[in-house]
Length: 196
Image (cartoon, rainbow, N blue to C red):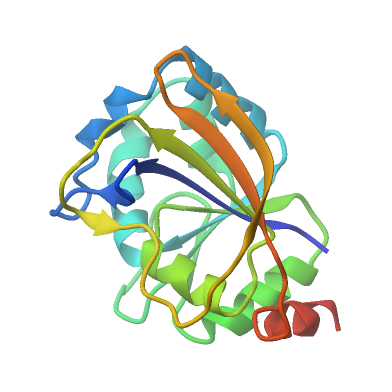
């Protein structure tokens, strides 16, 4: 069974982008050789990327014109975008899924292969969190109070305890945090279905 991991840069006050969609200029606060090397390490265990529409459109408009190891990875790896409104997905090696997000992710987790990663995609992540499908949350905590923006974690009626797997400080002042969600009877219902 493949693991599903969220990877996101997040500010100290909990935002993954500014007030405007795709407002991520603050990533420069933490981005550098260490974080790039971490992304390259991470790519070696990644089999597929999962996106919501907004993150997909931002990534698809940026990466095809970029060069280097990370760009090569982003442009060639298999990708799935979940959207009811997107008409087509033209970025190389992308499949569009319009319905049954939870069922599709459960199916993908059951397939053989390397780890599944979700980048950005806070709304998609919220759905997957509610169904207990994430095996790990990897966050690059950025030493910045953004003041306002789009929160990474959406309101949820569940309280989900996290177990710390790793805390790796960076020279930029950021910290890579790896957490494993504790499974409860409610949050693990879909996880159990995935194992069936």
